[in-house]
Image (cartoon, rainbow, N blue to C red; front, side, top):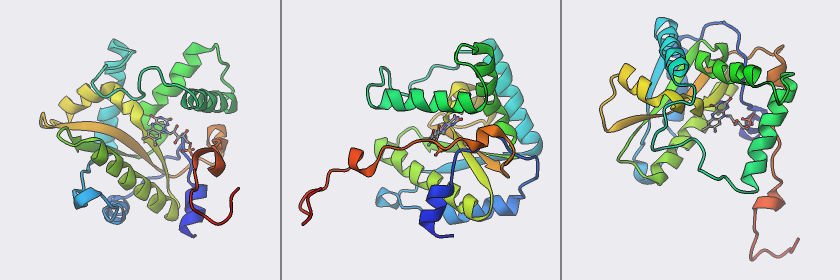
Length: 227
Ligand SMILES: Cc1cc2nc3c(=O)[nH]c(=O)nc-3n(C[C@H](O)[C@H](O)[C@H](O)COP(=O)(O)O)c2cc1C
């Protein structure tokens, strides 16, 4: 499959089969993703990969932390900026509406919505979880470069017939996991990635999110043809 085909095929998968993913497979994915570009070739990424018992332990700790504090651990790196304005606010809202609609969860059903959110902390059933870790000394540039790595990993997974879901929801238990993974104080957990085989029967995996058209976000200058 071409890169363009893979880009269009990749979606956030939120229901996985329990088929295992071997360590060698994850290594091969990381071995591909490490060729992602980064400014100055700094390669600001570090990962922690969990499977089996280690994966269950993370779920257990996250679930306990959220039971104590359902709002999550407010940190200095919020998942979204405060007061997200248009057009971003509506896009986020629409995505949530589309996702809950396909799952058959009503807008006012707070309990079911919370349950759906909580599935994040079970990696949506994926057998492998990858945590992206970054040095606190890194700036916004390096955070963007982490994104390059993550997308590379997702596309490589797609090529191998695997599926992913990026999971910034893990930021809600960032402190708990920092302690659990015994990370040094200069490092922080940014995001999780669920990795496994997609459950193609699950309605939630039928979600195809919308995108703004090229004309809405691109400003072409100096070309012959004026659109
Ligand atoms: C860095 C990052 C973090 C994300 N965190 C979550 C998350 O915690 N939980 C979740 O269900 N989806 C998460 N997503 C998935 C987005 O909602 C999804 O990428 C977006 O709606 C576009 O849909 P698509 O990935 O299916 O194309 C995240 C995506 C990215 C790139």
